[in-house]
Image (tube, rainbow, N blue to C red; front, side, top):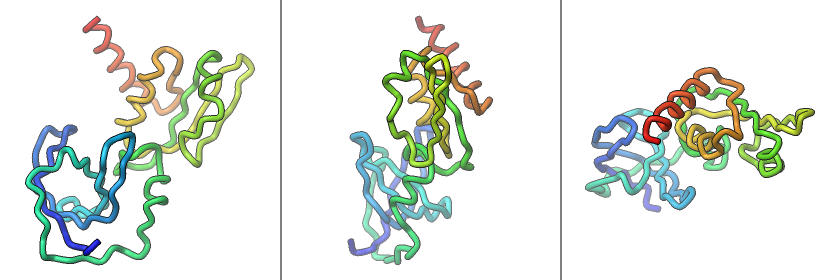
Length: 169
């Protein structure tokens, strides 16, 4: 509320490293039960999302900032699937089995999504993503009832994860 910068140590699970970050905090968001701080990161020189539970040694700084007039949390969140951002925006297409389609039909995964009902009762869902982490977890949640039609890179990630899963079972 006072537009003061925060400095903290951030534990990145993706890179398994800790960095000291100075951030201009723009918005606090509860997403699926996890609190996120969205703000301008001075280390990366871009808008970033930080999970509060991964922030250590948080200090409020005397330095103040002005939030950009064009920052709109709804536009930020609506730009692609989920809260994982930062990569290039690309469209993925998933095909759900006829049985799973009964549950998926009518769900809004993204405001720009496109749906296509196929003759056999399956459903194709296409929408933009910027990072594969969150969509990968969503795909795996549906098991063999969903197939990645595009992108090949995402399909390969799912295949690699499925191979790892079979090794532990």
